[in-house]
Amino acid sequence: MLVNSNGVILAPSIFDDFFKDWSLSNYSDTNTTLPAVNIRENENEFTVEVAVPGMNKEDFKINLENNVLTISSEKTIENEDNNDRYTRKEFSYQSFERSFNLPKDVVENDKITASYKNGELRIVIPKKEEAKPTPPKLIEIK
Image 1 (cartoon, rainbow, N blue to C red):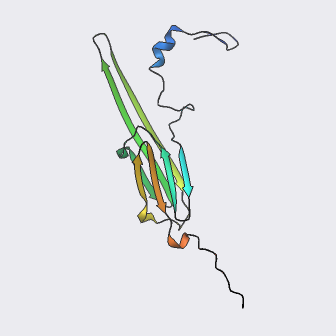
Image 2 (image 1 turned 90 degrees about the vertical axis):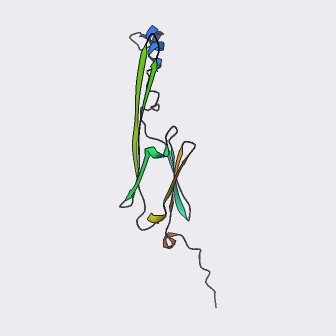
């Protein structure tokens, strides 16, 4: 790409199309591999939703230690394209780790579940009965 001294693009380079396939296509616009996470809370549980398309459930590791939930993943992909005139081999390595502090003495550690479907990792973290809100008590006036 030809650029003048003011940073204005003058013309595309013949190499732009050549290197297009070698771009960092598995990175976001911010050059990071951290997936988007939604955390919802209702009176019975916390739900953590992680957007991680293209992965397999075996690629994930979920750990809870000292009220810190850690979600991590590693994936390596190797693609090789052989042709009479050329060989191209590309490697892709993706990894991330996200950690979240859970409220102390609130979650049922033994009842946490996780599932992976359609590119979304979903973790359901139930609350202990004593941590759930109780309805207001109506006090009778005598």
